[in-house]
Image (cartoon, rainbow, N blue to C red):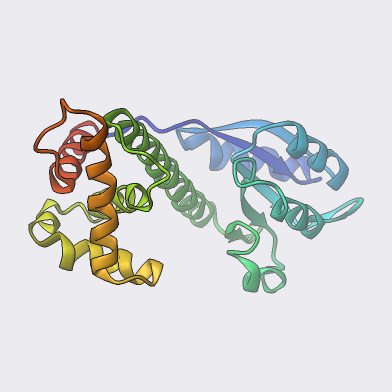
Length: 237
């Protein structure tokens, strides 16, 4: 089982008694989340978010100096690296349901829900963040390995190889390599609105560029590269 990255949490709520309760009954029971900050109003929360790296926010919508929606809208304009996920602590579910994806909201918890329900919702959300972080980590390692082999990112085919490896990893099925054009390139061609032949040609071109610049490289094929990186990633993750 992978060792999950510690998730840094900000709680924004002016009800300190509720914060203490949710800490003791739910959050403290989940291994890889750490409460790094607590804010009781919009101004404090925005200052913390601006000056710190926060992965997850538990956010009340009703605050003394304004609405939690102000915080949600500010977060929308942060760059992706600094953009935290949000769990709403409120009964006003109808206010934000239609904007879940737009605003990085991953769950809504009613303040009067049972402890077990709250725990399950938080656990589900944390698991989603863990998987997202794991995939990002794996993607970074694949990029590093392709770069080390000699792949140049100015070639479109290098990006297609990265996507191919990620697709097979996500589906946990090495058999997809048996007919990679039908099983994987077809998906990538649809994603980029290109023909399968275009995807294949760009991948081959990117791989051949390594051979042309390094006479010591022989018998290097896209399938060989993809297969070897996948085996290493699967064995380690």
